Length: 312
Ligand SMILES: Nc1nc2c(c(=O)[nH]1)N[C@H]1C(S)=C(S)[C@@H](COP(=O)(O)O)O[C@H]1N2
Ligand SMILES: [Mo]
Image (tube, rainbow, N blue to C red; front, side, top):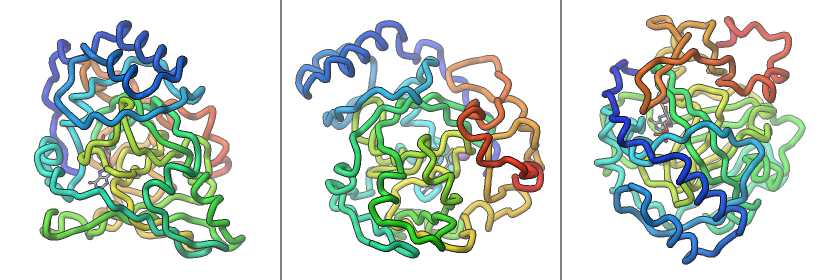
């Protein structure tokens, strides 16, 4: 990952939080329909965008921290297929056509199959998951995702006893994406099966109550909140259950810098920079980075007995 200092984002860009939270709570609690929801959302500062609203249940797994502004979440992106500058994905990702879309789930499964988007959305009720996202480059955001547990998808295909890992491959189209081999396309990622089945791990289809913008990984992307952001593969087309640990894009590009696990860990520095602190986009002062990005209570048991320095 290239290192660049994030530009300072003006505090005025941040959504007035108490006002926003009240409206949001009302929509979620009352389960209001599309039209009523849209009316209540009026007045929130935001760029023009798709009008589709998603009905999502609130989740006890959400953080109550202040959410990063929609504008920052959707204009300060890493999606290298659309360019390596933070502003490139928002400029270029409109070329991606996300409908129809098929996710093929294959490998060591009793019932391997493909899912179109409607079938994906029927696997489980949509939930709002407000998660911290910590990029390996040293910045972080708080993002109100809309999605469902990856476990719901995996259970539907009935993983075999021999399945130990899950590989994710993302869409690659040289007609609209970088041809330059910045990474070995398609972008690949992987999780251990128990990590993939963990209730915090979701497939996201939206953010801020709306369908995902392309630059954030439409139509479906992974979110694993206790790991560095690059584990959260965007625009997924293949999910494969495997016995062997799958290769991953960043690990292949720089194996001494990016390990398979990539759990957020302030005590394990990247070879070229510290991971002890982070800058929350929209804030000036840095804050200390938390072990497992603050999700230690939920996930530390997955790594019991493992040397987290060796398995970085
Ligand atoms: N296909 C693909 N997925 C990707 C990336 C990428 O370059 N290509 N970048 C990753 C990185 S480094 C981060 S930090 C997150 C950023 O997600 P966001 O732009 O939605 O905040 O996406 C991840 N998923
Ligand atoms: Mo990242």
